[in-house]
Structures are given as C-alpha cells and as structure tokens.
Length: 67
Image (cartoon, rainbow, N blue to C red):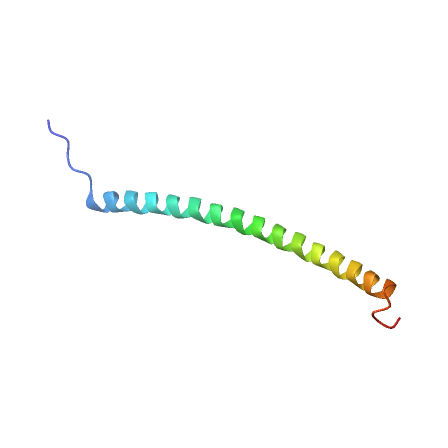
C-alpha cells in the first residue's frame, strides 16, 4: 500500500521549526559576539583611563599645568 502524504500543516510546522532552530543558533552567536565586544570596550576604557592618569603625571612633571 502506498504511503499517505504528510499533512500540509505538519509540513509547514516542520519548516517553521527548522527556521526557528536556525534563528536560535544565530541569536546565540550574536549574543556571544556582543559579549566579546563588551569585554573589549571595557578593556579599552580601562586603558584610556590609565593613559589619562599617566599624561596628567607627565604634564605635572614638566610643569605644563599648575598643581
């Protein structure tokens, strides 16, 4: 006996499920990348703070600013 064709609704639900899985994976990758960017931004901010502190010390030593 021949197999009965899949229910059209089930076919569409399976396709939707596959697409949702792909979107879920994309979302996970985006969150990972965003986390990395946030860490790099925090690192840069910290480095800029240290550079500013060092520049202030240099200016004071060279008497370029009043203490």
